[in-house]
Image (cartoon, rainbow, N blue to C red; front, side, top):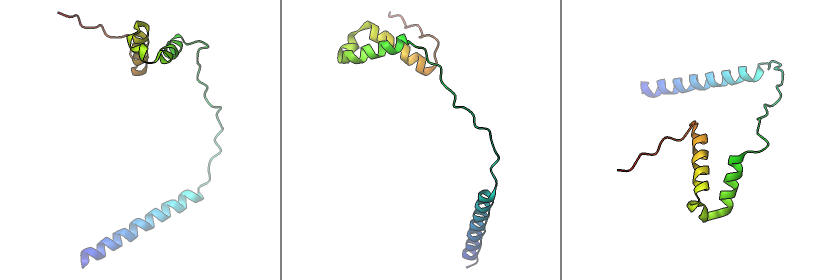
Length: 93
């Protein structure tokens, strides 16, 4: 029986602490923080990679056989992964 009593007391103490923390947070005055203007991303007027992606998208399944689309996809993957250049392809033996 003592274990159940300790568990109940522990639960009551936990709930009391949670209610107290919530009350303190709700009564806290928010400091006036100067609003910052949203950061604007600088995007180039013309992105050749984006244009290549659109062209390949319009080709549909034919893009899988298009060398330029394969290059565009490789460059897109490298940009996404943060690579500066594609690794050299292993030579066949």
